[in-house]
Length: 219
Ligand SMILES: *Cc1c(COP(=O)(O)O)cnc(C)c1O
Image 1 (cartoon, helix red, strand yellow):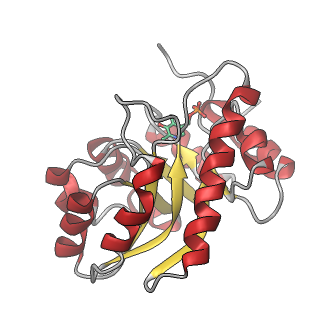
Image 2 (image 1 turned 120 degrees about the vertical axis):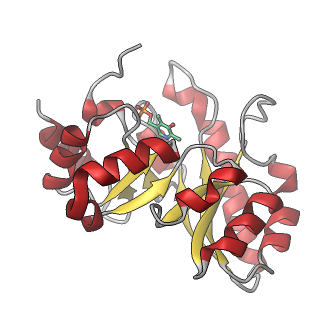
């Protein structure tokens, strides 16, 4: 099946309220263009430099879609990231949020990345620290929190990911209930190729498939 066919198949498979952010790491501009032609409206990138290259290669076509930063963003890359990305899904520290706010020049939508698996080597804020972080970030002028994002540990069996999605959804509802000024809990970004169905069952409103659309990544 083609990239377009794969994309349409997922679209048909999920409820209308769920958005698709296509995870495009390692893909060529041609592959990404094919997905955009098929109707993809949100593209996710893991690295600033990779996104920059694709942007340049796509030219005007890059403007037809929204670009999401879904990889860890280093503070020293914020300047380069801001002109490319419409949403930064991976804010996990006050310092990063401050760097974005200081340089953005306009309000930048961000999601807070949750380390739902509490894996020390991974990025994302620990679930128990989310509320405090969000309260702090909510005071920044040019950052607007619009949701949460999580990866969760990688499992062969998607069922094993369920508790981590469940916990992130619980946090999402809790933060939403706080009704903090300048915080809009609208998007819950979770679910990659192997577990997007489970993620949606647990409340995801935005899935991030990659390999199921583009094919397996070369090792
Ligand atoms: C690679 C990646 C994905 C997509 O993973 P697949 O298994 O290819 O679907 C989604 N989100 C993030 C943050 C990623 O790095």
